[in-house]
Length: 253
Ligand code: ATP
Ligand code: MG
Image (tube, rainbow, N blue to C red; front, side, top):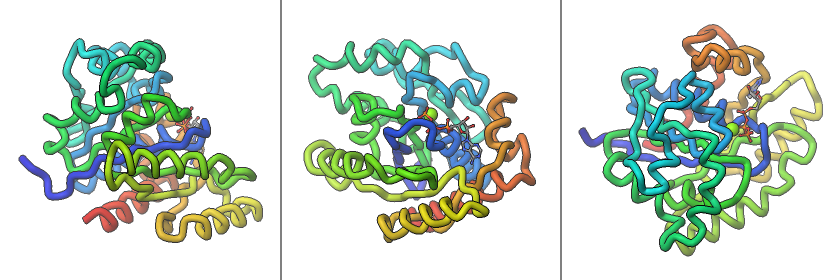
């Protein structure tokens, strides 16, 4: 079946701990609940997305696929929500693939036979701007950036913007930053409110209205191998990721 929407989105920020993995999982789960067919790809050697779903050691992983030893093999999490898992071994991939011709396009090629089956493919990227992230950017149409509403949240953004621009010129025409959203937001803190405002000024077209509030259930859910909708459907985390997913579907159709 060919889906009408057919988006590949890389969720990226080279700053660590900003909510990339939490957002990949829960945006994906929210889209699945809206009836979309979703594929998540764990492209991070930390394998946090894989661990969050309780799927460690589920071979073949994205690592074997990038090495040319296997195809991408999605595992079904729920009907309509699949994931390609990662492994700690993926940390060797940057070096191992560095002399491979066309090394930036390996993930894109691996995705080709698969991606028309899905409305949304979401790629969880590592907190770096190395070859794995470049592979995500070469395979995607858009990059979404989660940002914490903390002091210095925008530090390093020009570097990320520059790389997206360069990949968009040289490797993957038209790649753009398609969305920016605030995570771990505490509306009681003046600093958080001010930074969220600054982020919206910096990314007037890209910023989503929805901010993901600080919610401990979002940090607890992965310990049970669950997304927020199965772990705590009434939490603010579930509410916020549902609202964000709604904005995403509006933007992408
Ligand atoms: P890395 O750069 O290491 O891959 P990341 O950007 O993927 O990190 P996450 O792992 O999603 O970030 O989040 C970092 C930590 O913050 C995790 O422990 C996660 O459970 C927690 N967290 C993420 N979002 C929220 C939130 N809205 N409220 C509370 N805790 C959150
Ligand atoms: Mg992560």
